[in-house]
Image (tube, rainbow, N blue to C red; front, top):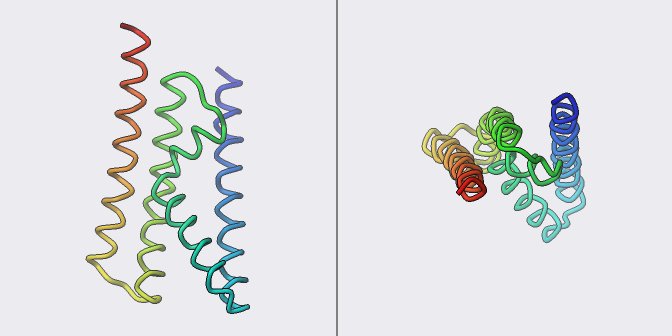
Length: 127
């Protein structure tokens, strides 16, 4: 159980580091007018924002249903504030309530679907 917690922590830290590196890369790409690089990195940030829990599970190769569900929960806790920030960025550094609600809903739905996949995997192993 202790190894499971350590693996989850390490995977969370690695995922956070990937996010930070992508964030810094998008700043550099914007500053150097590297439009394709900027758009590519922005797309990766968007995907990572909405799927933090899934990324934690895959990066950490998290095994066991309980650990996978914890990774999903941790990921959602990170995804919600990141989705708000992403909505602000997509609205050109202004607050757009509709975009914010849509981004929050997207993060929730992605993590909900991931929980269903985890549950289905558990059920298929049992039966």
